[in-house]
Length: 489
Ligand SMILES: [Zn+2]
Image (cartoon, rainbow, N blue to C red; front, side, top):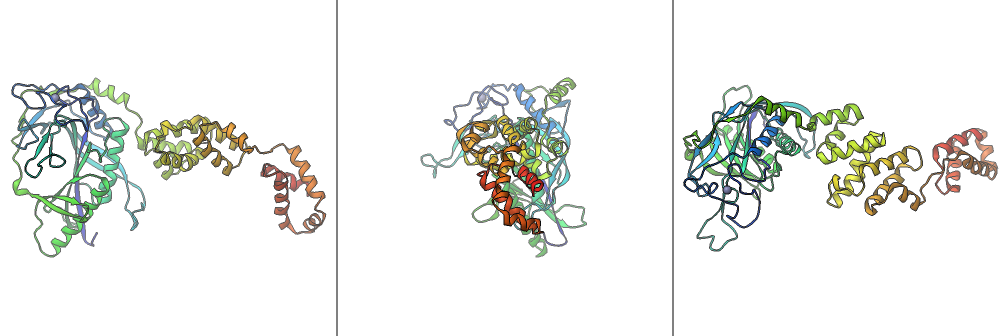
């Protein structure tokens, strides 16, 4: 960022809560499918139809709120947000306004600047204030592509209408595009982790908007902000924010007026462009939804949800560093995926060697999983089988390179470590009697080198090791070979 300026960024995330049915009716939540088939009088907004709150939405919303450090409010009120748009059949959206489901969140994330290659400079903690997460129903979709006469008509698909959403709103706490990027990734991961949302931006079940303005460092008031919408990947979001910061600084420096407006990210043009100006801002005329009771949440309910919450990824990462001696980077990578973290923990416990388990999982195993598009839970090598391989390595029966080769073969053929090792003839000879015999032979048949070594040419030691290894066809345990050679020479 240009010297003397700072960015002020607030984030809004819409996360689809992963229920099977919609928030106020029994229609299935499904992506794809024939248009307008998952609909009923309630989500079509037909006169006289009444909404009934889906209990499972509250279970998932509670998990989401707790995983983001939010306080669940004892009473929240659904409210009508009035606006007219073809994909909103009732003419209003049921949302929450002045009494949201949860509020006052404090969330600590890890964030870092990036160097010019996009690489992390140094992770450090940052605490974000999340103002609220309220509940609402999604609208339908206007369809402008793939149907007859789309140049003349727009189509409406209401399958999505009534899908439950949690809208997560932060204070304008972020000062860089990478902080916003790290925040969205954090939110995605914890929502997936606790099972509250699939949080997949490509599928549209997590959508984010960024409110961006810039000001001179030291200023305490805010300049006009621009709302960035339709950001369908975290990376595009980061690029859009970055572009917008530069655009606004240039405008301010040139003495131009920065308008309050909504802009879109144009990936092809690598720039943001205007969608609408704030002059068209809606007055939503919120008022309490008369067809729904206030939502009351008891202490017992919150305690019950708390007791079912899994250990969150950041806590798990810190535990892996502390109890298993992993580096911060390795532990972070391990908790990037809940399945991987569970796999690792099993392997670490069963092998008794957490660090070597981590090395094998983060290199060979992850590579093989990626190449075959599998997840840790359907890996052909179970955590227990990997642990068996690591124990074999620790006993010195095979060396590290052999173990890697064995793991790849176990993965391809679904066989145990023992089977692959004996098929490959990898078993190391650790029997010192047998090794001693070979050492004796080598000493006998290399008299000149023995004399030279004993005369002070210590470099020759490597020569003897090489000869013994060769005579054993590479199977002798090098540690024992070294020990016996030292004794005999
Ligand atoms: Zn319905």
